[in-house]
Amino acid sequence: MTDQPDQPSQAVQDYLKTIHRLGGGDRVVEPNQIAAALGVKAPSVTGMLKRLEQAGWIAYTPKEGARLTEAGLSEALRVIRRHRLVELFLTRVLGLDWSEVDAEAEALEHAISPRLEQAIADHLGEPLEDPHGHPIPSRTGELQRRDLRRLSEFRAGQTVVIREVQDDNPARLRHWYQQGLTPGATVAILAYEQLDDLFEVRVGGKLVRLGSEGLAGLRGELAPATSSPGTI
Image (cartoon, rainbow, N blue to C red; front, side):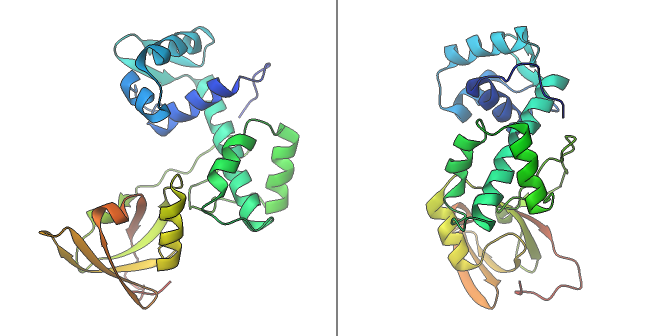
C-alpha cells in the first residue's frame, strides 16, 4: 500500500472504504447502494463520485456506478487496515469490550499517522484478524479472501466454524458474546423450523435458539470432518 502525497479527507476515506465493502474493488457499485450504506442522499453521492473520479480514486460511469482504481483500492485497504488494527489494540491492550470498539476505531482511523499505524501493528505482532474475525490487510496491501456463508444458509446436521461477525451493532455483539457465538466457535446446527424461522444450534455445550435475524451478521464455513460438534 502506497500513501498518496496528500492525505485524503475523512469523507474521501469513508467513501473509498464503503465502495470497497460493497465490492467495488472487483466490480461496479451502484450509486444507490453507496447512498444507502452511507446514509446520505443520492445527489450528494453523485457529486462526491465525480470528485473522486477527478482525483483518480475511482472509475465512474453516471447512472451505472463506481469501481475503485488501483490508487483507490490501495487507499481503501490502508484505511481498513488502520481501523482493524485500532479495534484490536483497543480490545487486547486497553481492554475495551468488542461491542464498543467499532465506533472508536471509526474516529481514530482518520487521525493516526503511518508511523503510529506500524507501531501498533508491530506491538500486536502483525495480526491477521481484528476482534470480530475480519482479516487485516497486510502492510503491503494484501487482503485475505475467504469464501464464507451466512450461518442462516446452513442446515440441520451441518457443523460450522464462525469466522467473522458484523461489528456495527453493539447490542447484538454483546448478545452473541453471551451465547458463545464468536469467531472460532464451532456451531452444530441441530434443527431448523421453517414455519417459525427458528434455528436450534449447540455451541460450547449450550443449546441456543435463534431466528435468521438473530444469526444475521454471523459468517462461517463448514468445520473440518475431524471437529467435534458443539465445541469451541
